[in-house]
Length: 353
Image (cartoon, rainbow, N blue to C red; front, side, top):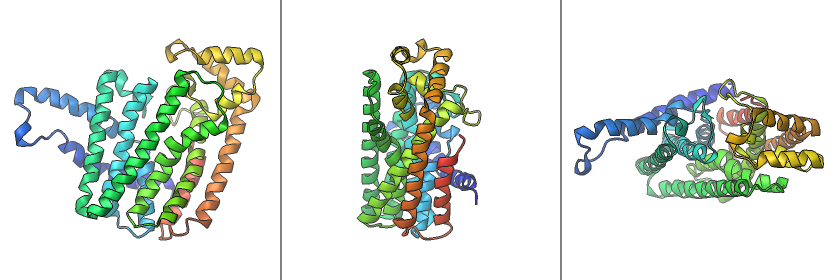
């Protein structure tokens, strides 16, 4: 089965579970009921909270979680709530990230803070954050208290590392740090992509199956390799793709001043005169950068080989992740889920949006 089909099938089921929670999210117990005259405000609040979940995404993270759990013999129904919480975590993080990055679009539509305000968008993210923990708490009925707590502990560690990675990225941007090494860039991607996008979801699926510490460790190392390849691919697509028409602006990472492998390579490869111009462009906020300047940066990346350099690193990381999957992750053995996880590797490194 094509991995896009796998994503689509899991998205339908996970989203159906999320919808149940969103439908009840504005319901309060008797002691703090909302008076009828305030119902329009509650409706508005729920509209904000529902916005990003209703737009949906690829559902890569919950799909990896479900496939990992099933490859280890865990029934789908026992992993569904954890997968739903995983997806809701992405939605609240994106609410916050879009405010912090002042993004223009999210999933083909204007970012929430551009439709309403930064304050309301951030607050919608807070509400989804609460919903995530509520879903995880409901796991107790399915998994029992001990395993529910183990899942919550993994969520806590994963999100702490992810948020720390965001702190580092924002700090380096605010300082206009132009001396970052590849190691620095990979440090950010370990936190925000390696763990959160690949290793975390897979570890959560494995925790549901009582995986050993050694197996969880191997999943983490696999996630770092594939996650870094994923991030490089994502950054390359930002420069070269419209993401299937969902993005109206190429080079968004340059507008936002995001530190990528391509940018780090460019900074150490251009002439002194071009370095001065590049530094001047990067020092300005999004609103003061022009499309012509962003196009110039992308052209320079092409000219000095920054895009090819990053693509080569992504290919090497993908190859190493394939090898690790075949040699260390043999415990993920139930079919067709193992084959579907294998197809996920190819999807991640070969996708066009």
